Every structure is written in structure tokens, then in C-alpha cells.
Amino acid sequence: MESEPRAPASGSHARSDDRTKGFFVGFDYSADALREIDVFFRKSGKLIVALKVREILGQELARNLA
Image (cartoon, rainbow, N blue to C red; front, side):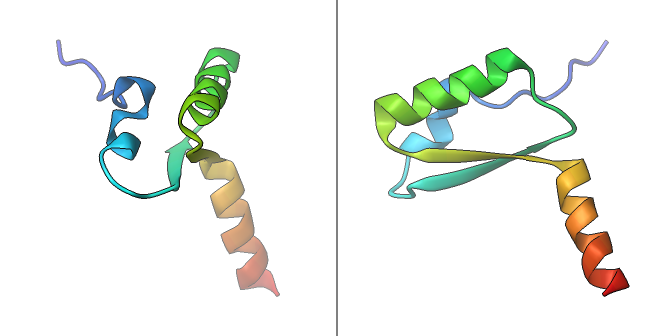
């Protein structure tokens, strides 16, 4: 049985370069996931924006209807 791909723990990819902002895209985020994103920001000063697919599609739909 294959496991689902997982994001690297503690945002290790964000630490590997000079970027100050990154994005996670998912269907939803648990309170624990949002807390870990906050902890990462406090420790590193690097921001991770947690986007939901619903938010992305909602903006796209709104643009198409305008």
C-alpha cells in the first residue's frame, strides 16, 4: 500500500534557499498544521502561506464571472 506524499517536516525546503515566503496548497489544514506553520515563522522569520484549493478556485471563478 502506497502512502500519500508528505511535505518535509519543519519546512526544510524553505530553509535551503534565500526565499522569505513559501506556499502550501491543500484542501484543508488542521489546527496542528497551522500551528506548525506559525512555529516555523517564529523560528525562521520565513512566511508560509497556507492556501486552500477552494480559495484559489473561488478567486478564479470570480475573475471568470467578472
